[in-house]
Image (tube, rainbow, N blue to C red):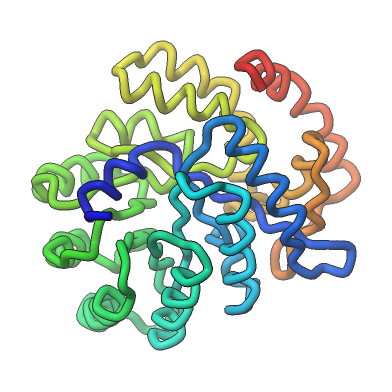
Length: 304
């Protein structure tokens, strides 16, 4: 598939499915596939398994590959599956190659976690991955580095198809989209709360965690935004907003914890997240139990 065709394929909600663990805390492919099948039935066709909200930093190389394989099996051949890569550059390339063999179509280079970074060093890191992985590549911007100037420079690479832009500066985002001139695609990397504003500024889609619970609501929101129906999009956002606001508490430290527990409300036991992710208190679980029923009722009203 050409880079242009792949870009068309992923211009939608890009969902990060939670990572399933069994009672021993080990990756559970069978439960993973149940979630993916549920999301597929709702219309989700782009998956980023084992990425940031799915505990990328807490998973081993082999575990990530297993999750990728389970996602491909559950999603079917017509879905797009992006594999997260990162950490050491050689490890990133090796993981990318193994993930593509396991069923991924593309790779998403996760935010740099090294303690001493520069745009000069980041350029070498990204180019090594772009040259070393034989498939479409997306980059994830969540901090000052990589700079917008570096991203525009890297947009010349034939394997780079998009950027997940997770810095909430809509004006900077608008300017970089305009300067790029449609060489690559730009996506909102901060999910539903900010997606309407990024899409007004030129985003083609957005990543989602709330879609684990409400895939039809978020797909309806994206469709409304793509059609320019702001009022309809904001109506759907009102349902999704409480999920995103809860996940954003305490420096977004509930990001993963909330969703893994909340999946019980749709009949899936995913286990608690691994440390250093926070665990929920009894009071927090009860709060989530009160929060979700009307939202899930709205999801069912969409046909779920």
